[in-house]
Amino acid sequence: MSLINKKIVSFSIFLYLTLIAGFFYDESLNGGAYGDWVGAYLNPIEDFSINFYETLINYDKYGNRHSPIYLIFLSSFLRIDLSIDVIRLIHLHFSIPLILIFYKCLELKFENTKKAYLALLSLIIFLSPTFRSLSIWPDSRLPGLLFFTITIFFYLKFEQTRLEKFMWLTSLFLIITSYISPNFSLFFIYFFYDIFKKISIPKIFLFFLFNFLFSIPILFYIFIMDVNFLIAGQTPSSSNQSLAFSYNFANKILIISSIIFFHLMPVFFYKKLKLKELKNVNELNK
Image (tube, rainbow, N blue to C red; front, side, top):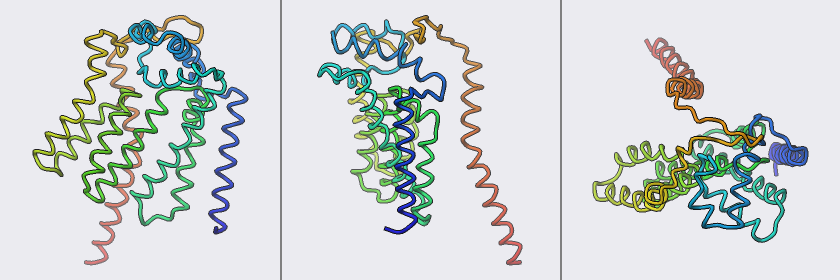
């Protein structure tokens, strides 16, 4: 192992230990993770472990606009008599593969970049207050992000190879992602449109049918069983008080568009630099 690789491994272990330390000191850097865990997640997890069916058909009463799938998964550990803290620790270790999958995505996308640089870039996730907080205080958004990153990995493999198996794996993991964290389901539009341009009409039909069939259970749950948790109306706080759900779409449009613009800034700067570089090359060739 080279010296740089040894340093990266040592740095990885150090960052992992800081996360473990944060777990034992109840770290919650993003300010809301602890409150969400106590106010929105803990009660349904305990109730799923005691009376699964009653909790499932009355899930919308908790005012939790997140999918029950991951909470059901965590409740299975309660049923085998593991403590809440042990369940939190298991969740923390389920979150760490996100960093590895992100690195594998970078490796596919930036083949000519030194792997040491990509490894260091992926380790930045350890420093994210949101990642640290949602690792320490279980939240369905983080496993949703993990499976979404796996979706991107298989999509990049499909982009490179055009092998159909990667197309189906992309679709499968996006479905899993959407069941865990429904907000990611919107990305179906992008993946369907992009894959639509690269496959034949019969395969497009099969691709659409595949996704529709796997969406039937959640559609049945929301619209037939009438457990529409997506518009539950309230989100419990850590003080067990209810926070009203706001339909102020103007604010949401401003906030979401600002977030999108912020994350697109590196793309804009990158394109500007590439255009400037191309202009300089053209001037030199005159």
